[in-house]
Image (spheres, rainbow, N blue to C red):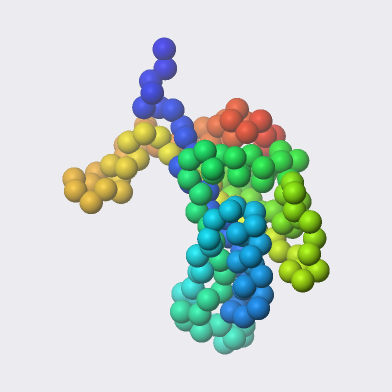
Length: 170
C-alpha cells in the first residue's frame, strides 16, 4: 500500500524559444510554438539592458508556452522521443525538476521544414511536484514544505525512467 501523498506528478512543462530580439524572427518563433503546442504563446521580456546585444530592459526577446496536466505529459513524451528518449543526469536540479533542449522543431512528428520560417530550437523545462506543494505557494497560511516531502534529484530521475521510459545517461 503506497501513500497517495508521496506520488510524484508532472506539475507543468514550459516550452521556451529565445530569439534575442523583437521583429520578424520573434513572430516566426511565435508561429512555431503555436504549431507545436496548439496554444497561444506569451512573449518574454528582457530583465536587464545589454548594449553588446542591442537589448533594452523590457524588450520582447522570446516566447513561451506553459502546459499542465495531460497536455504537458503528452508534450514531454513527444519531446523526449525527438531526443531518442535519452537525457543527461546533469539536466536534473536538486529538487528533481529537469530541462532539456530540442534542436529543431521539424523533429516533432507531423512538422515539415518551411523555408519561410527557418530553423528554431527550443528549451523544455519540466517541474515536478507532490500533492501538498500548494502549501508553499498559497496566499493564506503559507508554510514551508518539509524536507522529507520534497522531491530529490534521484527521485526525479526514477520518475522520468518509469513514466516516460527514458534513459538517463551520466
